[in-house]
Image 1 (cartoon, rainbow, N blue to C red):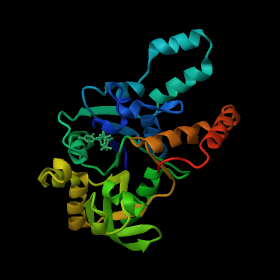
Image 2 (cartoon, rainbow, N blue to C red):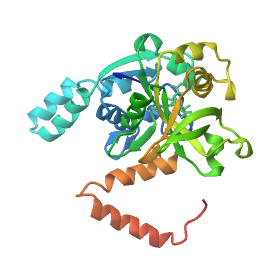
Image 3 (spheres, helix red, strand yellow):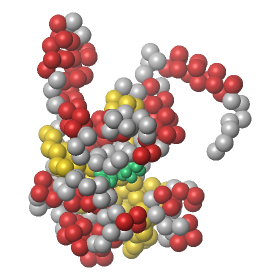
Length: 295
Ligand code: UTP
């Protein structure tokens, strides 16, 4: 299974990130010194994917621009002798080939993936949600691709979530058929805790075959009146079988403020020159808030 393309839907409203995302796509909010979407694209690139299809809307062209050259800025940096920064901004433009398709109405994640049908064509492809970060030595997408190659079936990424969070995710039912690999028997979008078939939540990573597009066209609007990717996946799984792989790594949902803020600390603390000063400030906060409030 040779996989070249990734579809990254970024056309949602990002309401959880308001007011920060009022005029800036939430995918462009920074985590330490890079926008959220750059972490996602880097994971794709490190997994061997070369072509990115962003599913965007009219407010979001700044996302494609981030992966293009900015010649004016480059010449300013060059003249100022800021060669390290110049290298960093150029590097982003050279990561991947970029295409953009429009989702003209925000009818849900499944509909967004369907908008990429012509750009994908007749080949297996990856889908990544544009605000979900997975950090691991073997990148998240690579973990899926490895299982898809061996199993010759579509594969989706899952992670265990606590019971009080199952109603925020698509949840799978499955039989374990290998170490952390499941043969999917069913899946439900955002079930109530007493209706959830497991605590294995679908997170934003998928390796799909092009027949998903037929299922996306045929399904009816589901939870929240949206065309749900989970419903089309359930239908595809019934027809041809599907695997789930328990993803290894640290996950941050950039649309969730606690995850977003933790991710900022996580990456900034890896920076040698920031670490001591940042830790000193965090330690002081721990003194100011000894027992924590809320949660
Ligand atoms: P989310 O539900 O996390 O994103 O969708 P959202 O709707 O932008 O954010 P909130 O919940 O209001 O804060 C998951 C992904 O699917 C994309 C989003 O951009 C996000 O990356 N999406 C969602 C679309 O591209 N189109 C849609 O119609 C819905």
